[in-house]
Length: 219
Image 1: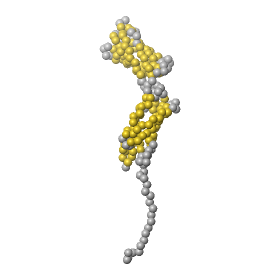
Image 2 (image 1 turned 180 degrees about the vertical axis):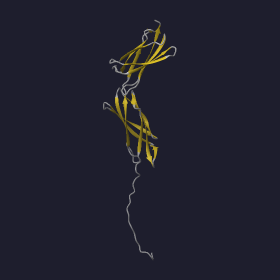
Image 3 (image 1 turned 90 degrees about the vertical axis):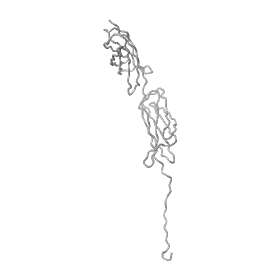
Image 4 (image 1 turned 60 degrees about the vertical axis):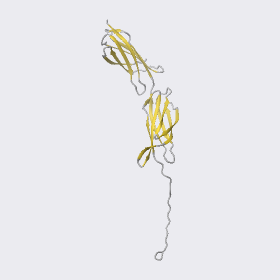
C-alpha cells in the first residue's frame, strides 16, 4: 500500500480422514450348555462419548471345544443386534471358548470378545419303588448315569414323596460307585405315593429327574 510494505508467510497442514470409531461387543451367552450353544450379542460404536448401535455389518463367531476342534460361522448385524446363532454341541463336553470378531471398516474399528462356557454331560436318572407295607416303610431305589450309560458316583439325589393327603416328605440318597442309590424312610400313611427323584446340575453334569408311583398298604 502507500503506507505498508508487502509481506508473506507459509505453513503446511494435513487433512486426514475421520478417525474410525471405537466398537464394543457385548455377548449374552449362558455359562453352561447341554445340547446346543445359543449365542446372542450386541455391537455398538462410540461417538462423542455416546454408545450407539452399529447399523449393519457382519461378525465371525468361532467356537473352540475342549478337544481342540473348532466351528466357525458368520453372523449378520442389524441395528446393533448380532444374529442369534445356535450351534449343536454334538456330544462334546468340557469348556468351550466363544470368540466373536468384528473386522472393522474405514468408519469403525475392529473388535472382538472372548467368552468361556462349560458344556455339561447329559444324565439319565431313574427311580423305582415297590409296593410295601407301612411297617416296612417307603423303599426307593434307582440309578444315575450318563447318556453313554457310564455310572455316576457320589452324587446327591433329592427325593420328594407326596402322599394322597398332600403330605410331602423330602429326603436324599447318594449314588454308589455303580451309579445306584437306595434308601428307606418311614411311611407317613397307607395309600398312594407319588415320588419324584431330582438330580441338580453340577459343574460337570446336567440336571435330570424321574417320577414313579407306589402304594403303601397295611401290615
